[in-house]
Amino acid sequence: MTRHQDHPQNGPTLSVGHGDTALAEALEQGLEAFNSAATNTTPEDRGELSVKAVDEDGELIGGLTGSTWSGLFAIDLLWVREDSRQDGWGSRLLRAAEDEARRRGCDRANVSSFTFQAPDFYRRHGYVETGRALGIPGGAEDVHLHKSLAQAPSEPQAPSDPRPLRTPGPV
Image 1: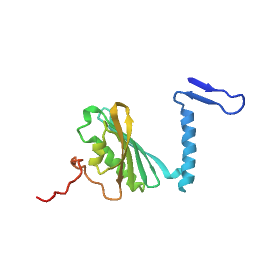
Image 2: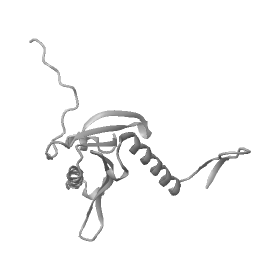
Image 3: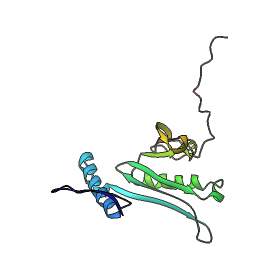
Image 4: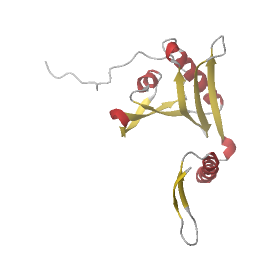
């Protein structure tokens, strides 16, 4: 449904509306071609990646989606249903995705997580904060994180104290 249209006498028009699958696909193709030219890569260098966990009844426990591109693993979504969140499924999904990304030649990973979601989860898995964006609804922030995949996979670490280290002064 179009809410507004700009109709000049001649030439292009501008339409504003709801989701448009055909538009999203055309934009994806155009951006992929631009990115390939700018980075001297091909669209074949990019691949979707997904990991899924289901229970004995075939019901979704959780999953992860992302993509790999010329050495970079970008995590788009990671979700675990509420009744399984303390059972280690998030860690298993992340490890499996990172292992597959390494198999595809990736040596780094990026993810963004709102402060009310899981930035601490990613930190426990070796991700380092690289920036924040303010202005998320509810007073939250968008935390950007990065991890080197060059080293061997590691088990999650206990949460660390986020306060900066202080060198003790003279006694």
